[in-house]
Length: 320
Figure (spheres, one colour):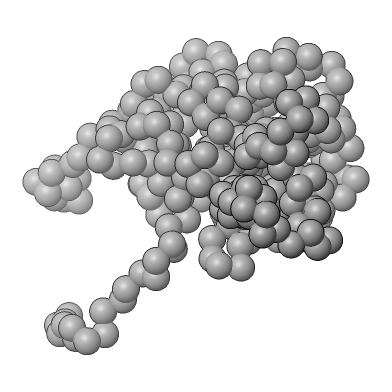
């Protein structure tokens, strides 16, 4: 076909439109993301996601808040300890309106960030007015006094930040791990969860633009079959942890889901290479960092799998 360029109709991205605005280390996937770990019982899904979250935790320290949704959370003390998940961030009933709780957490973190930013900006003015005596002791000013007053030192002080990232003008990073929720309505038919999967990076929106956002990490034994993941979760998946499976039909469905990124035959080759040993997995990152990461495919998290690029000559031989 013939094409003709129209320079006045070029598309320009609006500022702040990057869906992966969070800066992450070169070796880790971008955030915010929706990661799905698929494999049979005992394959290692929880271990894989826990280790991925651990790596984020090592980098972001206490500036990442991890929420766990799991009916078996009470028996997984190691996971809670390793990731420093607080009791108020553990939900053991997947069908107990979890989407609303996650929305509330994002909104609360947004409000806390805005409040601290405002108090920090107003602090110097407050102290100046207090020292000069030109201080309006209105109800609002009295509220500020309570916010700035430290009873331990009997002094007015700048509020201690809830997160160290506040000092850089950034909100915390939120991540939710949904584990052992297979068969729950949350992952299969819950419309609120479907909506959350579509807009997870827009949770906790700011009026001035941008949002807190939340990354989702979901473990499942079935990708598309009855009781598996709902379509919005599958379609918005940005990374996949795929363990060895004997279900050939489901494996074919998964490979077809990524056919827009790589040929099905090549995907199957990568899958076989990555899963030769039990508990090893194929990691697929649909939005990998092309400038620093060798491939979108890895065996586990530490070995890049780089597909061979066929030459035109080879393609011609295969078609003849």
